[in-house]
Image (tube, rainbow, N blue to C red; front, side, top):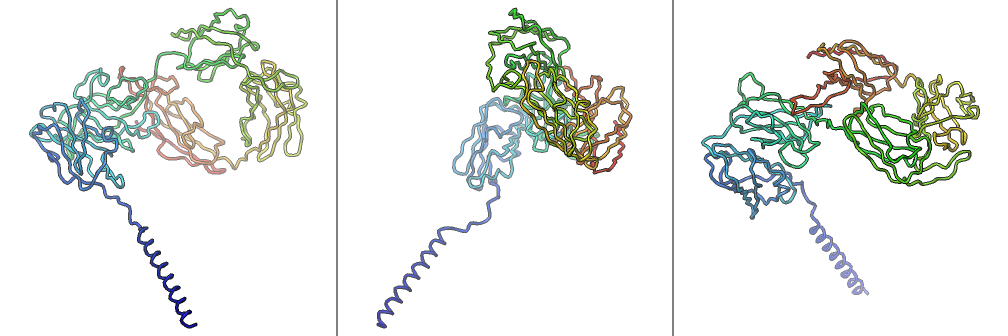
Length: 554
């Protein structure tokens, strides 16, 4: 019996030992790991060495301290002055050979910037030194120019923008010639052009759309510094500043044309133009007797218009001629597809464009403003106002004295109480569109704000008196436009009801007094109109009056 117990004990001990051994093996197979490798690869040697002179080779050989990989290296590489043909890359073990077909210019300093195109194999860390320089002459050029590129409209840093230097001062630059030197801006919009030959340069920046270095594609953004600038050495004591700010802008397309047009089913036509329209004539060419009887409705900017027919027009085709300023075109429309929805009591069926009414305030309404209920179609009539149910708290009121019908909306001008709950019920078939359509029963519920939801702001301004006006903008979160005014150089502006939060003020120098911000025009050597901001954020607090004075020295 004792022997049997000992035998079972030995078997149990053996099983425990095997389990421990298996667990130990498993622990060894699954390593705990270590810190992530953040050490970038380094160049151990090169042929020739960086900053070599009298360079005659057509290649560079780099040897690294670890295995590396190419990550969009040809796109990341910047060679300045630029080469006509692309650089070829060839990897072998830990060596990288860069070769080229071009014949290098005499007595020129060449700069190779690798960007993040060379990374280590394991973690993708980019090369620690991404600059390689050599000269085909007896010395390395050492002059430099630095600065930043900003968006001319909002002054935000512009990243990944080409900054280009030319040795000529020719009007056709940079439309026809490649730059002598170039670099790209970083995430902060900063640029640094190094190893430049001493001289005077024309400085441009370009946001290219086709990957090239020419300003040759519509829609590209450009910026330039007036006149020529001189390169300087680091630490130079010359009075001329070597740091420049270039304002990037996109030229306005001065050609007038129709950007978009569409049919509003069988009820109207919409035309969106490239720019503000001064004069327009539209002629229907298919002799459709219904079409000339339309209602014209323009956008506030006067760059889009809707022509509403007098009644639904089931045309097979429609051709119209448009003369807008110096633009003439003929546009053809085919029979519109109409999708019917359910019939409305007392009115016609609504098509896919729909006759819908929506409250603009969306649940919370400013107590000091009129209430607007909007439509996308013209409103022809509002009937039986006594059937509207207008409730303030628990009290039912008569909406009739306060309601006004406008072209696209119903406006209710009522002395709202602060923090009060309101309800508006519009029974079925009381509001009719121009085309005889009507609405389902609608219920709008909303609560008005209180005075403590707002603060006051008064700003006294003293801007440079330069013989022109200014465009004043009050901006909220994410640069949402709150208010815009055309103002003189001196005066003050009051805001009585600003929701609590942070604001800032932007001002445009309206040089031509046309009350719009004008972009630049390179061929005319015209810079965009200047933009400036009040240099502090403005905090509006509940029931608090904030007074500021802005004195801007030109």
